[in-house]
Length: 451
Image (tube, rainbow, N blue to C red; front, top):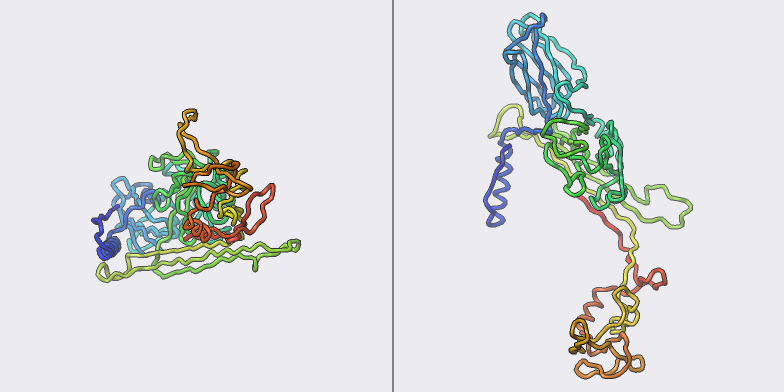
C-alpha cells in the first residue's frame, strides 16, 4: 500500500491544492492489495494422464471490469493468484500442444482461497473447451470456517432501518445477544444505530468478542466492540462471518470476524436512488387511541459507479473505476421532557420554595463571613434574615436583625444576571405535584440526524 504525505497547509489555497494532488496522484497509482478483504485462487494443471503441465498460461478475467490477472504454472504445475477483488470471474488455461480450457462463472468470495485443478487434453491451442464452474463451497486450502452473505442477499432481503448486522443472523453459529448495555432500541452506551441491529454471539463467545473489518481495514468500535462506521447497504458487495480462522492476520478476537467488502465500479455506469419513509400518515392507526403520537422517519441516499476515463493515464478500455455512496437518516419523534425553570418569585430573590431540593436547605449571606475558631473551616457566616416575611434591611450587605429565611435582599441581586436569566429560561408552564416536582415541560421534537 502506498501512502502520500504533505506538509502542513499554510492556507486554504494550499490545502485545496494538496487535496487535489492527493486525489490525482492516488488515481494514477496501481491497484493496491486489499489484504484481508481479498480472495485468492490456486490449483494444479494436469494432462489427461495425470502428469503435471508446467509453464501453462493462466488468465483470470474479471467479468465486471474486463480486467485480466495473468500468471503461469510453475515447474510442479501449480499456479496461484492472490489479492483478488471478490466477484465473478472466468479462468482460461492454455499451453502449446493442448486445447485451451475456459472455466466460466467462478464466484470468489471475500477471504476465500479457492482451489481449482484443471486438466488439459491434447490438441491445438486454438481449440477451446468451455466448462461451467461449479460452486466452490468447500474451503480446501485453509482451516477457515465461515459463511459469506453475497450481494443478492444483501440487496434483496428486507431490513428494518437498512442495518446490515441483521443479516449476521443468517449464518450458522450466530445468536443475537442484546444485554442492558446495548439495548435493542437505542444502542445503549455504545452507539446510536439505525433500525433493528444485532450484536451477535458467534460460536458461544460473548457479543463483545468480535472484530469488524471494512475493505480490510479495522472498523472496530474501540469501546463497544461493534462497528465504528455502519456501511451503507447499497455500497456492500458482500460480507463474510468467519467463525474460525487460524491465520495470524485475524488475531485479536475470540469471537467471529465480520469482514465487509464494498462495491467497486464496473465497465457500465449504474446508480441507485432511494428513500424509505415512515410517518404517522402512512402507518396504521390504533383505533383505540384518541391521539396519535407524531412520528416521521426518512432514510434516503444515492449510490453509483462506473468506469473513469483518464486520457493521459491510459487509452483503450478503462482500467480505472469509481464507486460512491451517500445515505442520510432523519428521525423526528414527539418528546416530553420535564425540567425546572426559575419562577418570577425566585428571580426576585425568594428562594423559600427550593429548600427541599437535594442541594437546598438554608442559604447564607456571602457577605457575612467572620472568623470562627469553633468552626471546622475557621469561618462562619449568617443566614439571610427576614422581618415580617420580608428581607430585613442591611448595611453594606450585612443584615443585623430578623429571623432566618431564604429571601435575598433586592439590593444584593445583580440586575444584569436577572435580565440574562429572564431571556434564557422560559416561564413555567406546568404545576408541580408531590410525585413530580417539575414546573416545566419541553415538547420540542426529538431529532436524530445521521449522514
